[in-house]
Image (tube, rainbow, N blue to C red; front, side, top):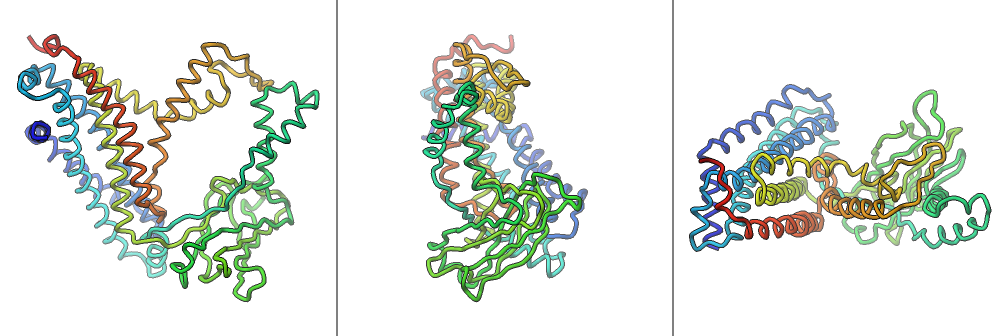
Length: 459
């Protein structure tokens, strides 16, 4: 590993020699300190967190991410074009060691800058929290400066039920003319509606199993996080409902009428010790509105509970961001392994933009065709070989992008959600090892076979 470390050290020296590190550090810290000063919060714990934590960490991630891509493309492609790498390549250093040393040097630089900026954000958040009112400081301690786990209701496997209903409905002449994919989607929506729709005057019951956390949750409050949609818009813009929690026949059962707006998340506390003897929390909601309400299975209802400290959780979240930077470094170096600096930067940036276009790719995969859908009938033409090829490519791209995008540490930190060690391990395995490893293997393979003598940038 001595050649790898030597290449990494040279990469770091080059970054300091061109004043990249001090200038970027001043830019990032200046943005971290200036942004909360320019954008005033509303004096609440959530407003403070939105400005100091969410915006600043988002700024750090964006600036460091683009810088990492630019540096990864420039440090390899630039050295080749300036004929500097040709001198190194004739020494007893393998091409893969050069590539790995460049990647390691960029990661060390990212670690220094990310650690410096993340520490500044943490200290600034702690300092500014002292100026909140006592009530808002209590909210900050219980809902944000904490690591909270999440529990949802276990939904049974609906596929057998959907397949059985679909088999019967296909015997109907009108239904049989629909494409099978559209027919199954329609039946699936009807079956899922039984778990998501609460009709006027009806009660929806959730049972959340917290048995494995029951001892740790004794005398600690729980929090409900809900989101719903309304079939008809209310004149007041809010919808009333009776929320009851606790064992159905126990004396500690509590209930209260809340008025909430639709299409947004709401969070409110529950008193401690509401679990039954088996560690199950029972929550009931009675719809007191003249319209039906829709609670999505994915994020319509969840229970949040205390699981750890904010400092450790914050560290794990920052490490997930570092995993993203490691992937971007691998993408930039892979592009620079066979392209010139400007083309490599353009190519890497294009891949980054593609990763944000998952909505389009998802629609193509669901429709089964890249061609236009008839908006009047909702029908699509019979897929041909081009559709099969393009849809397969988009499905593979969507799967790869989702391996990376499944992790959202900034959102989790700003809402007091736990970024567990398991999540961090998955992030490292999926982002760095699997996806980053694919780019690294491709980059090393191409770089090993590249003829450096033909890449003369200057005469």
